[in-house]
Length: 218
Image (tube, rainbow, N blue to C red; front, side, top):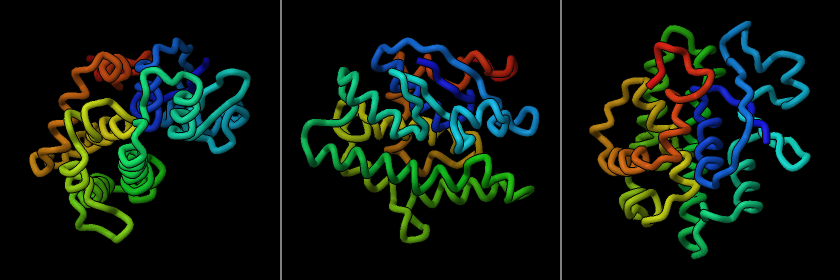
């Protein structure tokens, strides 16, 4: 497998965690989203992913983009350890939390949006993340903190690592980068701390990637 990734991309980080959890070795091709006007816009990378976004994963003779689609494929082809619970109710909860983060929070403070916002990008990102976490937001955003108070055990849903956790940790990292007050979200903070103690989350961390700048390395 070949993973096209950017060290700080939360979408790429989700996939790196899944690959690590499932013990899948891969070659990493860095795509710098800032250098040269954005290497994702090069003709070379557009041939890999016409959407000009990371991650993209070449595996088993196909090329996949979109982090959840990639993770679902890995789940189907490498079912151990399981990232979706067998219980239908818990499975639905995992998908709900993942979609909440992937569709309701992260796109509002990704690189393309922040470029459009300009000088107020930090304030914008803080508001988007806090709204998604706390729920004082447009109706399409639900209160992640409140949801997790009902679904969580050790992790987002019960005591097994799931697809929801793969989405949570990168989003919390974004929140911390934009100086969101995480003291307001004790459940999110507790789960995130527990997950970062797991090896798969540590080795896939943005501070430990081949393309991580020296000043940001762990």
